[in-house]
Image (cartoon, rainbow, N blue to C red):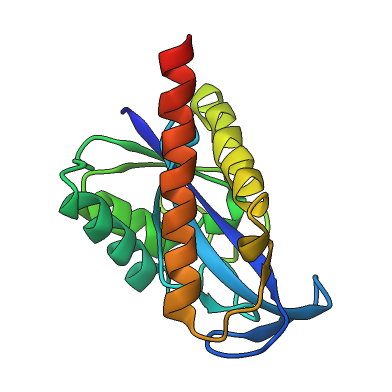
Length: 181
């Protein structure tokens, strides 16, 4: 594995509960989650869901640390990996967090970023960035699970557990497809 993909996803909430906030863009109460996937689009980790009224960078240092610890707990080495993320994740905080873990941040530049790039020259590989579409597909696969498409769970731990079950199902589907080929 040479790179990992980072993205967030908003899920509509019907019954209220923990980590719920109004998202004007969706015109609904939502919960937002951050996901990490490998190059094949297999979901690897999910951070603790946050209220949907926050943007993807809300508490990114804490959530990114959580994602890294989850990956390291299953012996996935992050040293030397490339991290692909869209311009919504272009922030000094995330770049510094990646640098501390020896991860190459391949973040699309955010034209609205007030602080500008971290240095005059920041790394960005256009070809590597094109692989980021796999996490968008992974998010679409997660939406195929009805219990994840719309959140009815009021307890965030239960809803997060459904994500882990979906990750396992997607992984098993991938393994089964390779056996048949």
